[in-house]
Length: 287
Image (cartoon, rainbow, N blue to C red):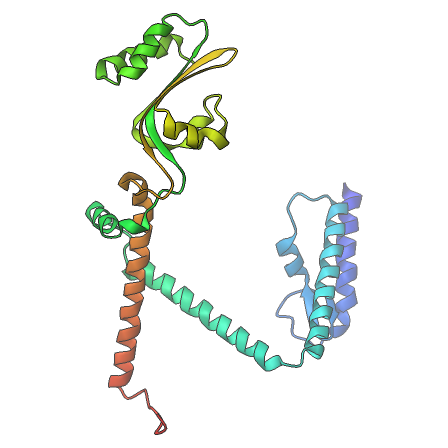
């Protein structure tokens, strides 16, 4: 291990020695490893990106590859600069990108300082109702009850009767029965599941599940080991109005975005009015 560490240290020292001929440059306390046409890669830059825990041999290999890549990228960049005729267009794109980055960072700072992301439940409900056309079901949804029991489980006739009844008493009996005999029991009369989620719980091909569940509301299926019972109380096809409880997260996100747009429109308008008031904007006579 000591020899490997010594090898890596000697490798860095050798690289440092290669660049030592450029002592006239002010390296601001950094140790140059390699120079290309007056541009330097420093030991500190290499150490900042080098993964932890490498052996000395792997460290030497990583350093060699990193330095080679740095040189190749720089050479390619210099070659590209000499062969791209329209540098003004690139400068303009860089300037526009820089401006966009500065504006974006400033907007994020303003949001953090002045704009709360707290949206009341009443606001979300009002937005959902006012923009109901924006919230549509993208995957078929159902509500209901599902129970899976072994073929040889006792009382299957009762299970068949209970799951069809939908009464509180029948549901209570199913819940008690499921604790002892069911492999899976899912009461989802009070929440929506996608058809594909439900189809995955029973021997029903997913690609046929939507059409099947449109026609059948109480389903009994069997395979070699289990009986499957599904009661569908509600079904929503693709394109139907999305239930509010499912749409609320998206409605909240839309409200936040809307508030941000309105906020920045006010900011820009205030900046414009201030600039006009202080005579900073001067239109040319040709306007």
